[in-house]
Length: 282
Image: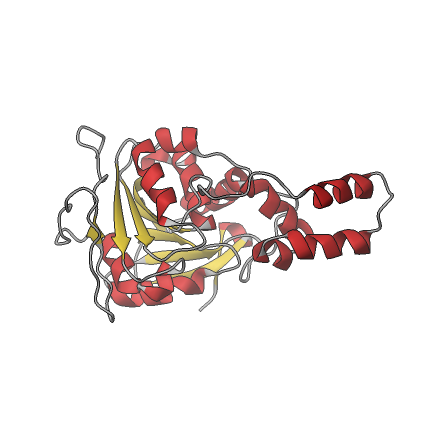
């Protein structure tokens, strides 16, 4: 059942009963419903809140082009309500993970740990650094009034990513803004434990991003789920649920460079080398 939060400014859902110990934040163009299978796998004993971030699901777009810090401020308002426990685990998928990073600075005494999956923590190694010359020229012409809106939009549709092309109005401006954000300093300042749980076959935010980012957190581990892509909450909900509840029975790290094998029906979550740093905060 759809519920309202933050004085009616956000919408989403709850699972389980009692104050929620988990706060779930979805990815771009997704909604809280992505976490339905994760919560089903976790069982009714886990109380959780899943939000529709501004511009997605049932929550209206922001009034202007927010970056992820402004999205975090909107989410932080939920911590003022009795729906959340004193300490919570934040699950952030993709765009939701961008927002989760900034929550630590807003409510540091309320976050127990983070579970991040498919989050663009760094630019992917193969990201095209230069916008094609014809498109750059067209943008200049458009700004000077020499190229019409219709022609400019046609070029955006040709050169933009699928997410960019699908976004309209203020949400397209939000997309462009967050695409240029840098999280290295934010990651370095997060004291709570962070679990990076990544789909081995993620093509949106490839595994190499997580492999380079894990060492930028003071206390983080990386787990690879074989045969799973970007939508890990729906593709491998059991694996994500185990980390959400802090399952201590998951296997220890494997040797450097090793790649865990998987079963077809239930991909395992097996920590790989480059995990939690000894001596870091827990």
